Amino acid sequence: MSLVPGAGPARELLRVQNLRKSFGASTVVDDLSFAIAPGECLGVIGPNGAGKTTTIRMCLGLSAPDAGQVSYALGPGSTRVLDMPQDAMAIKARLGVVSQIDTLDPDFSCSENLLVYGRYFGMRDAQIRERIPGLLQFASLSHKTDARPGELSGGMKRRLSLARALVNDPQLLLLDEPTTGLDPQARHLMWERLQLLLQQGKAILLTTHFMDEAERLCSRLLVIDHGRKIAEGTPRALIREHLEPDVVEVYGVGAHALMEAPVKSLAARVEISGETVFFYTQDAKPLLLALTEWPQLRTLHRPANLEDLFLKLTGRQIREDG
Amino acid sequence: MAPRDDPMQQAPMARQGGPQRGGLSPWRAPQLSLRFWPVFLRNLLVWRKLAIPSLVGNIAEPLMWLVAFGYGLGALVGQVTVSTVSGPVQVPYILFLASGSICMSAMNAASFEALYSAFSRMHVQKTWDGIMNAPVRLDDIVLAEMLWAAFKALFTATAILGVMLALGISHSPKLLLAWPVLLGVGITFSCIALIFNALANGYDFFTYYFTLFLTPMMFLSGIFFPREQLPPLVRTITDWLPLTSAVELVRPLFMDQWPSDGWRSLVVLLVYTVAAFWIALALTRKRFGG
Image (cartoon, rainbow over all chains, first blue to last red; front, side, top):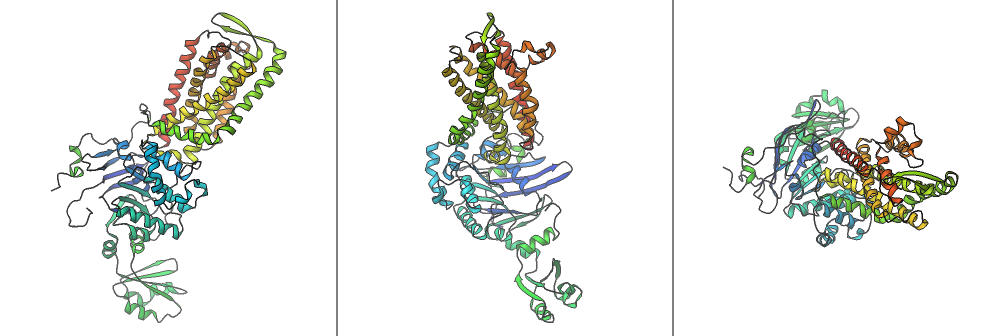
């Protein structure tokens, strides 16, 4: 049931078609289309201000698109298509959302946060209370049942937000930068939990700035910049399609001089970022051999990754609003 | 060809109802439902944790005013004349003040809740944003906040009413009717306050509302002295203040009398309420971008 190329059209939970949104003179989302199938994790990556959060807000009916359509087919064996914003209430009843900023209730304990949030979905108290221990266990917060968010670490708060988004047992989760600001341990635990959800057959739409996160979790990626889709595919396929397989990073005093040296011709593409020179090549061996002539420089030979792809597609310049 | 069981594969135009485009007017009619109730319950649950200290704060200050001015100033003032449906009636100053100041307390309680507390939930804690990710509309959240602030006003008024009964200031059986009227006063002032909540950039903004709007109204609505003392032009203007209508409804009930122009006062409060709620909702929708 996943979107494997050549496997034929799969059922989709969410389809976004030709979405467009402008604020004043600036177009924030420009003719964006994508879809998510059950069990799939779609990652949306792009620099700050690329339109990720606006896209999510339109998917949630919180912002009205200027053009285009957001449609859902949720619920068990659902044959009815629900459109934003007309069917917003019916759609949200079956969605789980974790927004960029925690919106937990600071005056409530972890279990009260879940109880109160479940009520917004029209769930009965008994029904919610039955789910609370399982949700807290999933979030590794069983020992914090009566603690308030103020007593939790950043990672715990994010996991409580995730548990809260699962209170209505949604089929599709929309996660806006779920691990921003977390330490590596907390991020790994979050990844593990998200993998578990994917194994349970839930679909996830995820925005992130972390390329390792995108590579690890996402079955498919959408790269957007200036509101437009600039690439789409599996992480591996995108890297193969856009990049040479090998990267040699060279840094140290005098590294920039390599741009003028004949060694440059041994690479298919050379870029500078900060003090580091990046050589992209099909075969790193002759390049590494030639670089031994500069013993004061340090080299790092590695396979091309998503970060290279991201920087190639969206540029190395720091954005003014970034 | 798309499989027939996949509704997403149908052409969009074939489906019921075209998409709504951006630019729905924020002034469209309120879309209210019972989904407001869990939001109201949320506020109730928070308040239950803090009810006792908040109760002390809510009734201590109005009682100090009442005791200091009612007994202190009352001894100097003596009797005050109030017009009722059965003509002018002489009442002790403490009764005059108590019946007016309870309206002021309801107004203040509703205003504080719908300004400072609602703003904390809306802007600082982002509680509203969290709720809107669930199937609850902004309209229902605004309704819940409005009713919640009115409930707090009623709670405060009830506590003060209890103390007034204990002090023997009034034993009028019509006080039972003053109770729903005070809830109405709470509703009116929470609606007005929510307009300023929607416009606020920070807590400082509310100082303007209190000093430029509520405080002058307190002195012009016949709470501390009869409006007959005001110059004729000012008096005519104050005829249309919401707090004046509240006082003119509540005061006679404290004296076991019927208000002399009850229907007019009720209509004035109702017009303020409906208009303020509509404006508050529209401005809040604008604030939230839709």
